[in-house]
Image 1 (cartoon, rainbow, N blue to C red):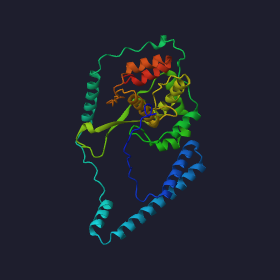
Image 2: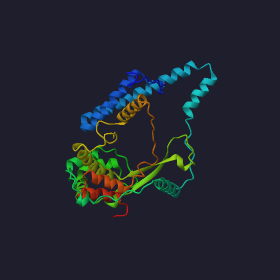
Image 3: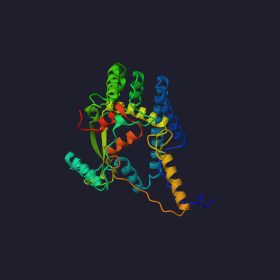
Image 4: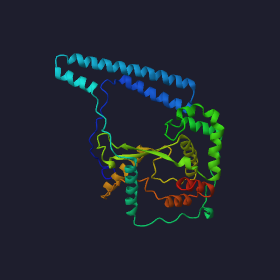
Length: 333
């Protein structure tokens, strides 16, 4: 056991929790999250009412607990002016937001473009052109993306997070509300894209927002920002439809990478950490060295030709392959 599973000592990290958060409130919070998950799956009005009731009750209980906590804290510190001052300062003077930056949209566009170009220049070999998808004879194969019924489109529309992008003509929450009336038109647009193997240009546009990686970082340093693209709501629905069909195809034919944990059923960051930890323990037992890599701009440096070649090798051909080629082609209308 010492060779296969050697003991290792790690320091436990004590996460700071709200001092007024009692066991009762924690239990109520778990019940609220459970009710939220139940409503998201069922979409029943009774489950929504139950969720709203628990949410209102938890909000009142948290407010009452915070009031009692600070009331007791002020009473015990009544004879100590310094403690009273610190308490009032923490309540009345929250941490100041980061100073506004003078960086412009052109600065960010230039920085990210040059960053990707520098990384790509370090590649030792150029990717090969994708294999002709029309002549691919791999079995199994996915030649055509299936059209979807209106009920499936409605379910995906309602299950998506209603985040509104500046490219959306109306708020996403409003679109979800009136989606039954617009369902025939949305379904026609989505099925038209699936059958033709063509993605409308408007669905490939995104609003990119730079966000500081950590609040304490210098806002004047452009390298401290992370670009976050925001797609239109209808574009997300189309992507979800294609993602569901591609995932089903890969799962049914056992084509998933065995080391993949993201975007895979019954897998998460937890399974990824368990796999990495197990391999590190095995390497340590075998007295081997281990190297961990943190790739910079991993998704942005994926070569489109290499990606299309990979899709071809997985049996994706015909209009299904053309749909992905169309989505990756920023210049095609």
